[in-house]
Image 1: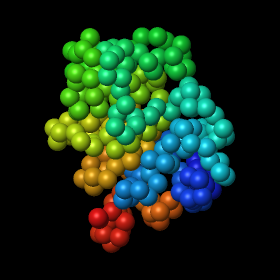
Image 2: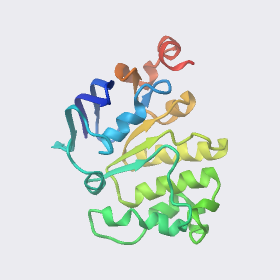
Image 3: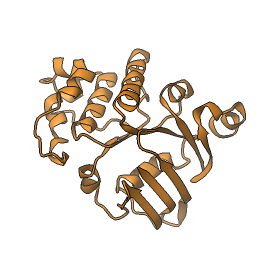
Length: 231
């Protein structure tokens, strides 16, 4: 479904992504992992068109999207949940969710029932302002907003960061449901090993902007953890 070939990216004179080749199959959950500062969020910004690539190619469903705008990438079915959630605090929950509707490919302009079924708290609080929600509820809102556009691929950047444990567990269950029951393809940036192992099929380890290891989640051994994940 998603294929990155020879991706290079720079910040000024600093080479941040080095010849990255990553592929995600339809219906798979890939966990992108590595210590802070190794290029994970940079890679997601490249995938979403928020940063240009110096060289390489990004293919989605067999189409070269390397030069697509952020809006166009949403329209073709890429949903994105950024680090820090980035909801609109002064808008209501319902208004936050409706922001994703114009990007739907089918032209529907109503919030899908599935969003409220997955996150009942959003239905209960749909007239409350986003800024009044707890951190965990805001994270659920951010995921719901991405799901509103009916994505083919869901990208999540550290969805468990700063979230209370019971909500972390709920979010893990929902990602598994979306991926394994509904068949939604997922790219997840995550540093918490138990969570990554719970939801992921495969892992890809980055270090200093390079892919250094990948494989089935069951193959993520103590040696790799110690070398590339342990602080």
